[in-house]
Amino acid sequence: MNGSIEIKEMTQADWPAVAEIYKEGIETGLATFEKEIPSWEIWDRNHIDTCRLVWVQGDELLGWAALSAVSSRCVYGGVAEVSVYVATKARGKKVGEKLFLALISESERNGFWTLQSGIFSENVASINLHKKLGFRMVGYREKIGQLNGVWRNTTLMERRSKIVGA
Image: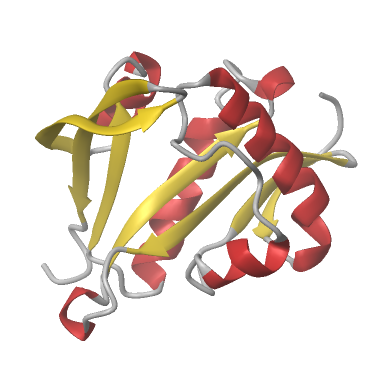
């Protein structure tokens, strides 16, 4: 992990590296109910056009962050679901935290007043990072879905902007 660091807007050209990092996250069993990487077209359709960021260090893409709509109703237009993924070799080096902070800033520039996350309850590191970044626990969903035949619980967390909608 050498070289200059840049957080920049994600493009379709970044997809192979983004998909590989997503795959690593899926393999942990702690990041998502997804079991397979979608095509770029499906991923693109399911994520908001703005607030798509990648962390590039030197010539390596080491993390990505994006937002998904929580509802198609216009009243929820400023509310989004967060995704932040970090390459295995970059974990524990503050990449996720700094990328997440950039995503929060970018979301506020784009008019989002609430960010939310549904986190597997066993993913204590993610829950703690969310707390550190101003998220609060707003709920708990027991046995909300199955992953590999095992019922999983999620902790619901949200962050309200102090800038947008204040």
